[in-house]
Image (cartoon, rainbow, N blue to C red; front, top):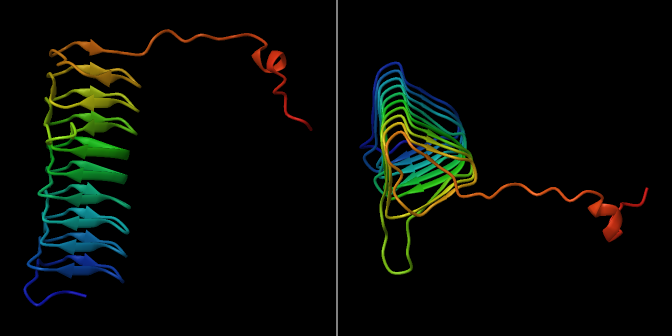
Length: 199
């Protein structure tokens, strides 16, 4: 289904079962796969939108990849050659050129620079119970998997956030932030607790 006011550029491929609504603009050489819904969306030249993604009131830059099963809303902006992967949601977020959020991530009220890697399971915790707060991640930063960034907070250029870290304070450029303690291993715990599975 394609609304009458939608613009679609040359050499764009629209697969079966796609819905494009409400003033969307699709560039040239775009591929839109099955099950996608676009509402007031702008898709740049050469971009790919993979199966069952929903994009509303948002922009996707040239050569970017979105999906499958991605959700962009609230004026999200995916930069050129950036990647938004499966089960990733962006709300009122800028994802800079060449940056990647590939798996199972929520990025809300965030400004993310160029060439940033966002690890699987990362969340920007943008709501403090009263108002929305912003997370800023500078160029070339690396955010480890299963991290939570408690807004308002900033991560500097070339900084690293270790896997499983809860970031509550700004991380200077070039620094490493970690919040997890050392792992404890308790030998023979299963036998002592009688938790051995019956065969």
